[in-house]
Length: 200
Image (cartoon, rainbow, N blue to C red; front, side, top):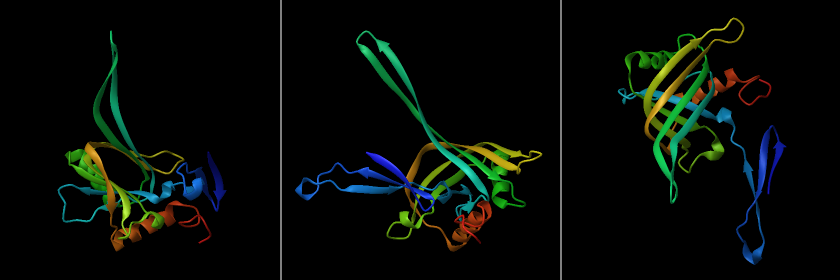
């Protein structure tokens, strides 16, 4: 059984643990939902290994997607499943910022056909490991598209699609002090009244 309960602006889920405890009793686990605001993207040109990865400012949304083509072949003996290669990509959306070097680098990578590195970090203190590192997804690939969207009423956006080569890797990664400051600065500027939604 799984229940969602609002607690302090977040939802906390309780799921019954079916593993037997001493004496045959069962102990409920409390699981907290991930906050999408805590997931941020860092980028670097693959050729610039001596530079730190940098954050695209004012990120509003991104999607890591994984897909395999599944072909069902009907035979006289039954159905055979043929599994294709993994295809992964990252859809990126952000509010345009003036003179953002990362946005310029991403745009230029499409024009020049340059390979990118991307990290998705879950910047949540509760998720850090014993070394203070954050859960991360790491991948390399090429931006298929980069669009500067300028509407008459809405905030001007940048959107892009990054096609991933091979398989993304899952591990933990560090943030430098400068990267930490960039993350916190962006959070304060993309949420109402400050980074945690409270009064500033």
